[in-house]
Length: 68
Image (cartoon, rainbow, N blue to C red; front, side, top):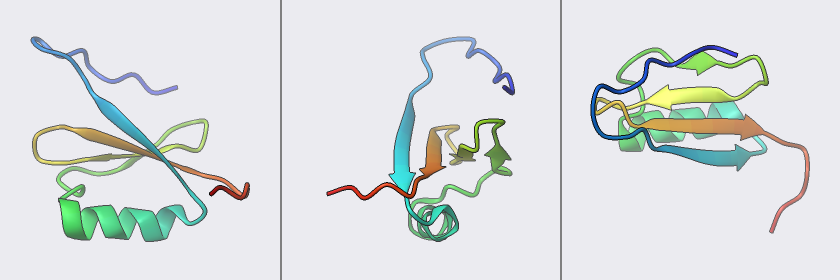
């Protein structure tokens, strides 16, 4: 798994979202919430990490499971 640099102060907060269409979710979060400030990273487990200008991270994971 890729390593992320540890913050020099404060803490790191990541939101994790499960989606049945990660690319559609990516476009949504990049368009409406600014999660395209730096290149996305695809992790070895398939999670797509998005980042905004404040370095807040958003993890998107695809699933075929139905959820309600």
